[in-house]
Image 1: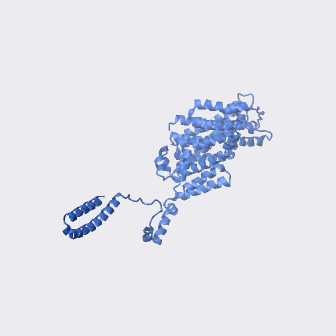
Image 2: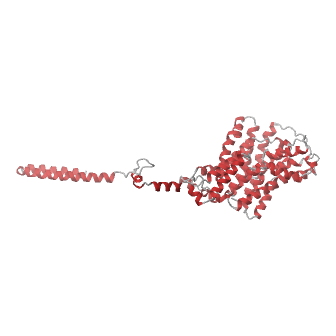
Image 3: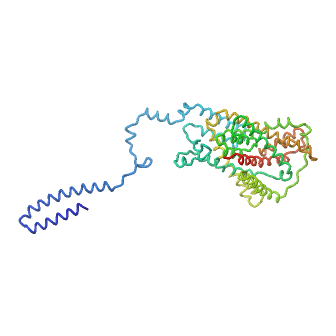
Length: 467
């Protein structure tokens, strides 16, 4: 704009001179032509400078769009490309840390146990595969530092550096998956044997003694209160409860505790029979129990509501697990939500089981698993499970001293909440000594009571151990 104003001012001055002095017109015209030429050149330079100042600086192209190939073409070499490939592959990770290979071998063993031996395959198989994924060097699918100190470090997720398993693990860390599993468990549980024989609630409660006995044992071995509580819950033989409690109290032990809990649940037919036979006489094993009374639908509907209210008021920390368990059971028993009941028993239960298993397996890194603590957890897990089984049997024997209607002590071992496997073990051992004895429905009472008992025990530990 300044150049145009200067040009018109000069042109006006030239016209005035031409009018005033005609004789000098030709000389003036030549001067004007030269001035105009110089001025046009200056104007072009000025306009170019202004355009350069006003025009925005082009941002570098995102991704590969608009990028020049010359940077690679100039520096490319076959040797360097091969070196970069090797450095970025997992082979270098194996060379740096041999523990990756050990953890992958352990994952293979767990896959074998789940697929071939059928040890709790629905959850042990996803756990084993999650263990395999998290220990593949260079994959960076799980970062334990994102959850260091028992807290979720959301800033790492905001930076976009999280892997797939980091996102899935949030469901465990926030306590979502175990509670959803409990809705499915509730929808598949029949509390009628417990309602028909309320005394079996005591047998389910007695089996939780193993949790607190192991808590004391873990303290004696040097674990702190929070770690000891998480280890003790293995004695409840309830995988979702063990995962829920450990994710709150000792998340760094989640992998070993989950593997121990589900492994011992699968070994119920191996662990329990010797304990049951050791603590009972042949005469006690042959005790026949009379058939349970029938339970009305009204009782089945009222039961989950009353249990939820009572436990949630007495022990609020147990409300998430108990509430979800009883919600699922109410869906099953009320008769008006059949579609919801089928959904939580099948689709929801299956989907959450996959996510839960893979997420728990992701925590089994070499640092968290290959240490003496893991060995201690596995040993204490056996102790917890054994104490739980034995406590139920011993309480049944004690109750027989004061009861006219005798209880077969074998059903006491079903107080651990491995539903319905523990009840089936009681039935199997009982029929070995009395083929006409049918203990399954009687054993289901303590069995489902154990599910409630383990959730209550977890609530007690959460209430007394500040997070």
